Structures are given as C-alpha cells and as structure tokens.
Image (cartoon, rainbow, N blue to C red; front, side, top):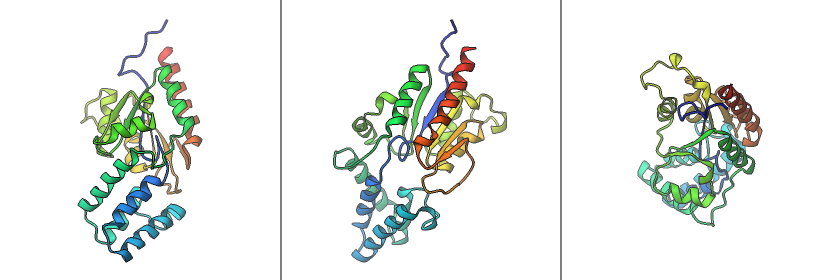
Length: 247
C-alpha cells in the first residue's frame, strides 16, 4: 500500500473567494449603494448606472475593472471618493453579507468536487485579498468551512499569492521562477487573471480561469465564463497528480 502523501507532497488546489467559491452580484450592488451614499445625488446615480452597464456589458464599458468590485472602486474614484470612503463602504458590505438579506450562491457542483478531492487527498486552500475581519462569519454563513483545509486572508495578491504557493511547495522565496520544481502539484482557480492565475503560471502551476466578462487577460489551462465549465480541468489535474502519487 502506497504511503499517504505528506503535506509537502499533496496536490494543492488554491481557490479564490469572491466570484469563485461563491458568486452573485448582490454584494457588489450593495457596495455600490454604500459608495453612492457618500456622494451627492447626481454623481451617486451615475455610479449606480455605471455599475449596471458594467455588469450587463463587461469589459467594453469599463476595461480597467476586472470585476464588479473594481468597477465600483473605479467609478467611485472618478466621482471623487477616496480610499477611506471606499474601504468604509466595503466594510459595510462585508457586514451585510453575513446576514440573510444578501443573496449569495455557492456553486453546488464546485462544492461537491472540493469535497471529493479532499477525501482523495487534495489539500484545498482559500486565498483572498479580503481582510480577516468578518471573513469567518461569512464562511460559516455560506457553510464552506468543511470544504477547506486552510484559509489565508489578506493574501496581497498577486505577489502574496506567489509567496503562498512557494510555501505550499516548501520552496525558497528567492528561487528563480524558472527553477521552481513541482509547480504542477498546484492548481489555482479564480476570476482575476493577474491576481489569481498569473502567479501560479509563473511557477508551473495549473491555472483555471473564470472569465465571466470575456476579458481574455491571459492564458490558462482552462478558461470559461462559468466555474461549472472548468470542473473537468480541475478533475483532470487532480486525477493525474493523485495517480502519480500512488505509483
């Protein structure tokens, strides 16, 4: 019987949070309302209308915004909101997300796959740029804690994600990316190519990119607008890694 893989040998799936482990536009729309509340009526209405157009049409409307969160921030700054105001609106939004009044969806097929992969020996780590404050109650509300082996808040993506991936491999932080061995033991999945996918690709990890708005920001081993269309990419990676570990 083959030995169980150690932590450093395990295949590791690193998942993003917003737009990946859960999805839905209700939080972003609330964030926009809290940001607009800090503006005069006219600019506030323009911010809300701008977000509506972005969510309907995507990158063609606001190419500098990768997702709805960034769209609100970009639009808010255009109308004079500073980082303190945006951060306050975000903190209020995170608090709102903890309650039943904010509709959130955990993709059932993805949750089931993570459950199966963990049972087979894959380590699942949540990496998010969101601060730790308020994160645990939200994870409990979504009932996703049983899907996770590790949680890293305030990751500081993209650079912080590469540091995290190197730690998972037990590798020096200063090793050149082209000298990193074993990166294929990792899979990164998320909806922000620069933050979630590129750091993994640099060290040889497999990347599964949720490209909701068709931005095509960069390459990946699997790209689709919905996470359900990337599950085979994840399964194929896990199957290959687990088979290699058993042989």
